[in-house]
Length: 267
Image (tube, rainbow, N blue to C red; front, side, top):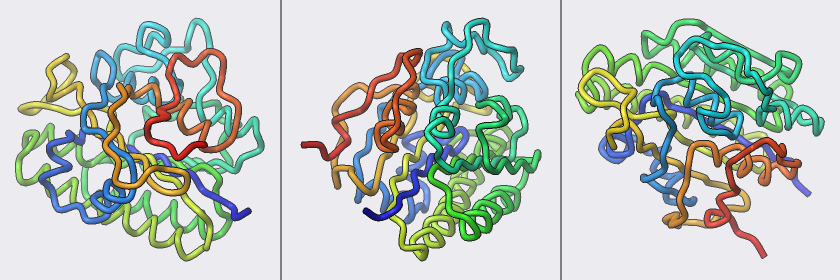
């Protein structure tokens, strides 16, 4: 059996309709070769830390209790996907450019953690991507989480759906292409889950408006249906159990999410 890497790629603030409008050949290919929905839903409040906590810990906001971009310890701990992967002896990496995400797992669950705490220019997305590539080429990961934050910053500065914002998505697409091209040269199989934490409107987000709450959710690669439009309800906290299933590791009993079987090739 070939070795495999599972990638989780989060593009902060990327609306589904923006992904469909921006110049994104790498992400378009993931959509064409995988299973996707542009109607997945994030959690409330639709801001970065609560949404990523649900993404990585598999529960809705009332369960984890994070309601702002300020972290507070969970009253009743919930293991993250990264914790579950490390418990199953997977090699794990996390590359990001917004430091508030540092508490998405236990520190000891990461073989490599790389943070450049500055998501304010296109180059910072590139720096964390190149770091991911360098480390993955030196010692491949079984699970690699890449977070790119410049898109959200561009939305706040210039407005969601502005030309600057769409260009930021295109920049993220080039970063993804670089990472996946480098991975493909290793000969390992791969499965990629591409998504966003939330959308946005005007120069803000955080509401239950469709522009804020709907996110793209794209699963592509080994073990995934090709060219498939997911019909099942898909929520951001379904990410954990779905990727645990792909990794072949036990799901945590605390997770509320469900495996998105509609996306998978299963007997």
